[in-house]
Length: 113
Length: 119
Image (cartoon, rainbow over all chains, first blue to last red; front, side, top):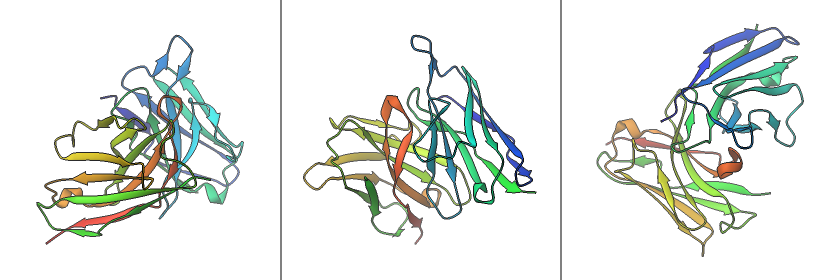
């Protein structure tokens, strides 16, 4: 199985500041033939199901604010929230879809400082 | 706009079988997607259980494979989860999702249903 490890487990950021979440896969999830990274990011607010934010490590889903951005390649990835808003308080998960079983990171809780 | 809705018992006795159904609204289950089940233990992260594609081919998490069956019913636009020999460790919120397969993550989620395993 591909193990996904996120860091930190939690972080507190002031409103309007930047939040950075890291995700590392235990093996490369890059398809070298087309340079696609098989990585998704999700946001889960309390009492709600996860919401898909980003595919292909950096492609935002429709309707996702542009303050959310994804980057990275191979085994190391980052989700950045530029200008944290109160509604961004949530747990964020990365997930690889390179192979089965699909695996998720353990989650990173983002709070307001 | 595709929506998913889980249904099934909220309480299952130990050693019995957990059975859940996911109804797909607003779209056909006979489309080029994978239909999956995810669970989340109380206060914990997300665990992939498995999925079934439009041809009925299934893929399961090896950690649950011996106990899991996912099936598709195109006549009712539903897919189902069966998990046998349950224990308290199977107590979780169960989500059904639409999985984009090799072109993305899971873009549609049900609201989730809580299943408690207890006598």
